[in-house]
Image (cartoon, helix red, strand yellow):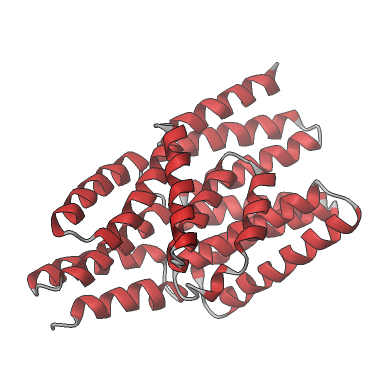
Length: 308
C-alpha cells in the first residue's frame, strides 16, 4: 500500500491512456492523491494531483472550474513546499487564464520566462510542457506561423516524455501546424511541410491502430486538413463532420470547437457563406460552453463580418 500512489501515477499517466478513454484516468488519479497523503507520500500524491489537473484540461472540463482547482492546488503545493510540481501547475493555470482572456500579456511573459529557465537548467521535461502550452495558445488563436516556428525550434519532444498524454497532444498539434503551413506555402517549402506533417500523422495512425481511442478525433481533424491541402472537397466535408461528431461523442469539447472553427475557415475559402456562418456559430457555442470568453468575442466579430 505504501507504493499505491506511485503505482497509480505511473499507470494512469504513462500507461492506461494508450488504450482507455482519458476520462477514465481522472478518478484513479484523485484516489492516488488521497492515498498518497494518507500514507505520508506527499511527493507522489502531488504528482497524481498534477496529472489529474492536466487530464482535466485535455478532456475539456469548464475552464472556470479548472482555474478554481488549480488555484487551490497551488495553495496546497506552496504549503507542502512542492516547488517542482507547483511550477507545472502554475504553467497550466497560466494557460487557462490566457484562454479566458485574463492577464494575457502577463501570461505570455510567464511562459517565456519558464521556457528560458527550462533551457538554462536543461530541464527537458519542463521545456516540453511549456512548448505544449505555448503551442496550445498559438493554435487556439490560429497563429499558424508562430505554431510551426515553435515546433521546428522545439525539435522531437517525444525523446523526453514519450509515454505521457502530453506528448500525444503535442503530436496532434504539431501535425496540424505543419498542415496549415503546407496549405499556405508553395514549392519546396510546401513539400517540406507536407512531409513533416505526414511523418507526424503516421505516429498518430500507429497509436490509433494499437487501440488509442483518444486520438481518433485528432485523425479526423488532420484527415480533413489533408483533404483541404489536396483539394478534395467532398472528403474534407466528410472528415470535418466526422471530427465534430467524434469529438462530441468522446467528450472533447474544445476539440469540437476547434473542428468547427477549422471547418468554417475551409468553407470561407470556398466562398460558401452558409456553412461558414454555421460552423462559426457552432464553434462560438462550444467555446462559450468551455468558458473561453475572449475567443467567443473574436468569433462573434468574425461571424458578424461574414454576415455583412
